[in-house]
Image 1 (cartoon, rainbow, N blue to C red):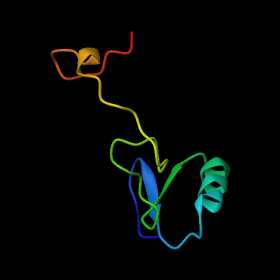
Image 2: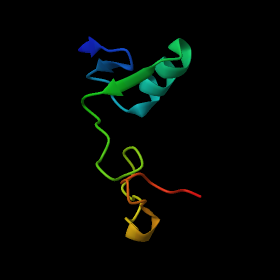
Image 3: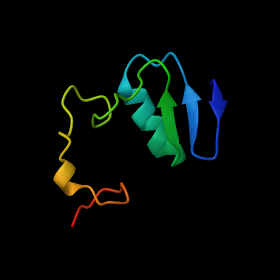
Image 4: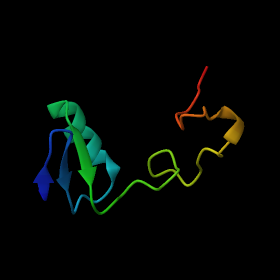
Length: 66
């Protein structure tokens, strides 16, 4: 374990996502693996992501999902 915050425990060295999922569900706490970081503008570590659509952004910069 590399560290713990109010939001997550940071670990390193897990072989893939399955042990992380089990830990998250067992302890009901987020587990972030430094060796498998999330990709910017992607859904988790998926190789595809959401396309930016400026028409769906509000003037205050927050997303408008309605």
